[in-house]
Image 1 (cartoon, rainbow, N blue to C red):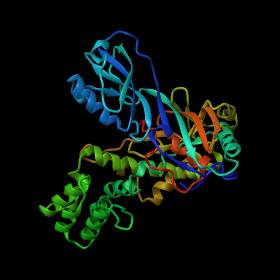
Image 2 (spheres, rainbow, N blue to C red):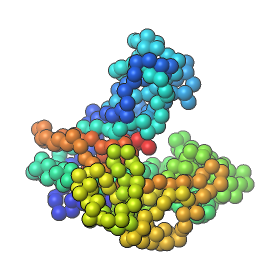
Image 3 (cartoon, rainbow, N blue to C red):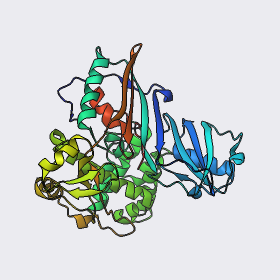
Image 4 (cartoon, rainbow, N blue to C red):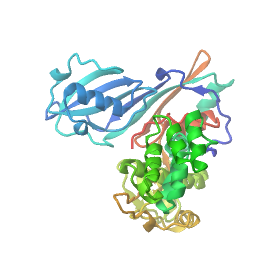
Amino acid sequence: MSSYLTAALPGTGGTLRQEPADFFVEEIPLYEACGEGEHLYLTVEKSGITTFDLLRQLAGALHCPEREIGYAGLKDARAVTRQTVSVPSRRPADVAGLELPGVRILCARLHRNKLRLGHLAGNRFRIRIHRPEAEALPRAEAILGVLQDLGVPNRFGDQRYGVLGNSHRIGRAILTGDFPGAMREIIGDPDEIRHPEWQAAALAYRAGNLEEAAARLPRHCHPERRLLEGLRSGQAPRAAVLGLPRKLLRLYLSAYQSSLFDRLVDMRLNSLERRWAGDLACKHVNGACFQVSDPAAEQPRADAFEISPTAPLYGCKVPLAGGQAGLLERSLLDKERLTLDAFRLSGGLTMDGERRPLRVPLLEVAANAEGDDLLLAFRLPKGSFATAVLHEVMKISTIPTELMDATD
C-alpha cells in the first residue's frame, strides 16, 4: 500500500510488535450466549498460538472432533487475542480447571447453535507503537480525526498476499490457466526469499534441477514440496497445481480478488465519502446494497455514515455498478483481460463474488503517549483490518504482514 487518504498529514513513524502484548485484539460477539442449549460457548484469551492451534488443543482436551468446534473469526498468533468458540455437547463443568498452553478460558456459557464463521460484529484493537517520531500524539490525533469523519479505506493490504507478497499473482495465474507461471510463483522468486535453503531450492527449480530443489526445500514448505513431487512423478504443471488442497487454491484466488478490490479503493480514494450516480451503496446496519440514482439526495445519509459506496470482489455472480463507478469496475476487468465469467472455475473453485464497502467507520478511538511509545485504541467492523488504520497513522513503507484481524 502506498496511497494515503490522509496524505496531507505527516505520519507518526515508529515500529510495531516487540512482544504479543503490544497488539491486543478483542472479538465483539454478534450475539451473546443465551444460557441454554447443546453448544458450549467459550470466551478464551490466547497468546502465541493461532486460532487453529486453539481448536486442535480444545479438540484433544475435550475429545471432540475438531470440525465440530465453531469459531467466528481467525486471530493472529503474535498477539494477545480474545475470541469465542463453541463446542457441542459439553457443559461448563467440563472445562472447569482446564489448562491449555497459551490459553485462558474466561467464560463458559450454553447456547442453542454452533458458532459460525462471520458471527461477530467486529474487533477492538489496542496497539503499541514503539519509538515514533516527535509530535507523534498530535499527528495521530489529527489523522484519526480525519478517518473518523471520512472513514477508513477498507483495503485488505499486504497481509492478504502472503510472506512473499505474491499470493494474488498465484491466484491470477490459476484463474487464467497459466499453471507454469503459478508454479514459479509458488516455488518463489529467489530474489524475494530470505530463508537460505528455500532460496537455494528456488534457484535450483529455476535452473531445472527438480531433485536438488526438492532436497533443499525447508520442512515448512509443504505446498512447494508437493508441487515438485508432482512434477518429478510426471505430472503436468496443471495437474500439479490443481492437486494442491482446494482450501489453499481458493486462498490464492481470494488474494487476487482482494488485490483488484484494493486497486478500486485507490481509484476512489479521493471520494470515498461521496456517492456517484450508479453506485451500489451498502447500508452499514445490515449490509444490504442498493443503486444510487440521486447522489445529492443520498449524500446526507453518507455523511451520517449510514451508507457507503461499494466495489466488487469480482466473481461470476457479482453485480457491477452503473454510471461512472461501473466504468471504473469494468475498465479494471478489461485491463486484466478478464470477464466475470472467468471466475467460473471447475473443481469447486468457482468464485461467486460479492460487494464490499470502500470505507468503514472507525469507532471508540483513543490515542495516548506512554513514555516513548504511542498507544492506539479503536474498533472496526468485521472483515476490516487494523493495518488499514496503521497505514494511515504511521505512514511507513511496510506494516508487518501478521497484523490482521483475519475475520474472513
